[in-house]
Image 1 (tube, rainbow, N blue to C red):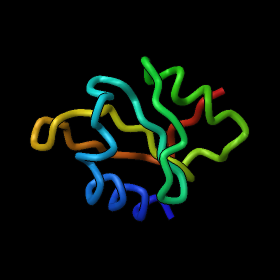
Image 2: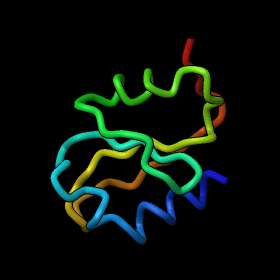
Image 3: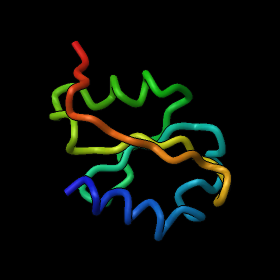
Image 4: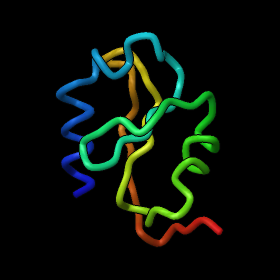
Length: 77
């Protein structure tokens, strides 16, 4: 469940971002799938996975990241 992935990121943020500031992390099923230089690279790494089954977050120091809103009306071709 995607909400579990957000909780996993929040609970493990310091460990997840260590050495990866300003990179993009992909998390699926409460596991880090990889780190990427760009958000597009992160999404491309998950081709074949259904949108909404993983998250992509920019690694930022706690308190500096932004609030994100998601809408299922968006799709990628």
